[in-house]
Image (cartoon, rainbow, N blue to C red; front, top):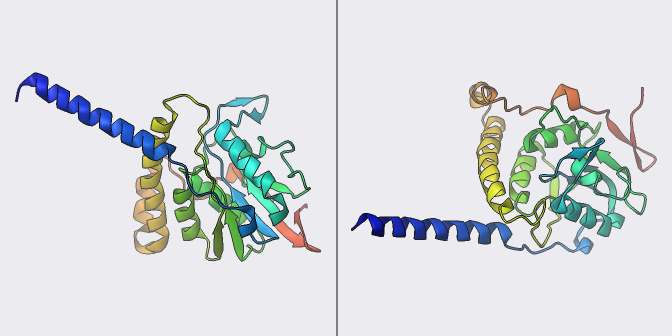
Length: 241
């Protein structure tokens, strides 16, 4: 086989791989109808990648707008939504849905503190004095399975999946699916190790040391923790001191 043929084969294989990644990360999913969500549910809405921040407001990007739109569409099914700021900033009112359903932050937003998926879920769960017996999960279609794995490791109650259909990214740039494929692959590796640390406490200390070398924190960072949420007279409220 000549050098030219080897280059041609490598180019063909590489091109095929790129097409496969594109197809996988653009493939629509089966969208969950709002009617499948029990009334009075509490929803977790972790954010996808965004387009930056301006004057304290996150430029949410199309993917987070899609999550926000679905929350509004299914608003009557929720009694409370906990979202990351990139999702809540995509709402007309970051603190409530259009029907008045309260929207709380999963954690305080600090542009100088990175809060990964696993830690964000820990932050959200830690906000409850008494964690609901059922949670609804809504996330970007290509983020959803990883978030679900993390939440199942952290939470023993029932999880109802509110899935989105079409796949959007921050914007329509052709490179977005490839960027997310790389980021998501690393995310799966890190999150799986974090899940293992919960399932097998004997190796938790070892994994904590290993992940700590790369500044990967499993717990909710102290700098982004928020007050507890309690239910009073059938309504959710933030504790004040």
